[in-house]
Length: 330
Image 1 (cartoon, helix red, strand yellow):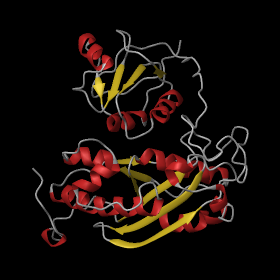
Image 2: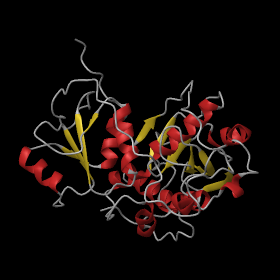
Image 3: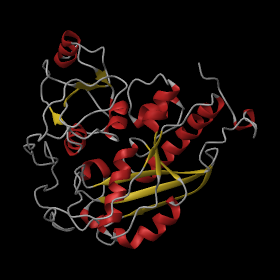
């Protein structure tokens, strides 16, 4: 079991030499979860090597389109109309990210949104590594009921004041990251760092309505704010089951079950973009089941047990997506 720690408990000689020298704890709010959605607010807490806060920064961003789920983030067209464009805040954001590891809760999402915004602005995001606090909490074996930020905050006694407000979410994560980092250092754990490969070009789909044209919302919360889409057929043959400890391979059939910290559709988008076949049901042909609750009694989990289908959780799946093996030629 991990012991309670204070900064004084870790001497300079005990601190792992391989750990990064600084971190940028980031949270972004967006118009949605698709690859062409936009950032509408961003916050960065800069931390030193031991997780101590150096400073923080926050800005709203005009996405030049409908702001999306206002009932979640609270940022209306009117609130964003006078906000700077992303290209106007890119230099400031660059200064705050350069030379630091990007830390976020479900970091692949925040990283991808930031990288796409930089690419649209014809710039390169200055981030080379990211650290996901979901993955870190798993490495530490924290007894969390789920992978939500609120659960991580509650574990460390951090009070969340404004959920889905970028500045408060970043503050909460920074306060929860510091004891996590200290615990990892005390146990000399390897941090779950992942390489970030910036986009160098970008092409959006046809633009959505611009700010001020909040068509289709009328102030009412719809049952679904993203249009339903039929996914294209996977172009690769199914190579068979995933081998635990190995790599995913293009064409593998992946099914999802239960609650996830990332919106299900976004997870499915990432799987599709990686060349995987997203299955809506589970059969003997399914390569892998992704679930955060492998002991549940859902039909997919039950069938996975019957068929011996490999099972991984959301955090592990996110890591696997970063290194998908290309389909065999011929």
